[in-house]
Picture 1 (spheres, one colour):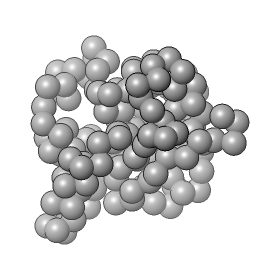
Picture 2 (cartoon, helix red, strand yellow):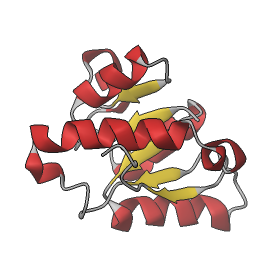
Picture 3 (cartoon, helix red, strand yellow):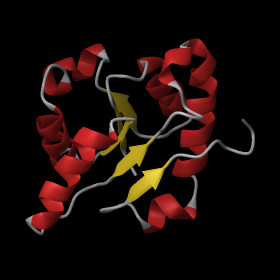
Picture 4 (tube, one colour):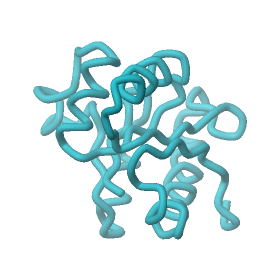
Length: 130
């Protein structure tokens, strides 16, 4: 599973997960801004599919609409990971970074990620280490 962090998440999470050898990028990293930043959620979803990436977000309303639009047309997609409040309150700033890193590492190392990489919807849970 290759992840794309929605713009609501700090790029620090992606940097740390890459250091741990996972394929994770963030929309608001300078290297990704031209590809993803400033686009509608529908367009971000479409671009993530082109790039084989699963989006990590807390924006259920917009991304569920995009996902269901693709599924209604019978198009396979790379899924979504919802990191919801609680426990992943993005307004906690730096306090949520370590928790997100641990939870995403746990997900990326799990059988769930391997078995449901395409078309899956995952609800991120705190890792046992958090």
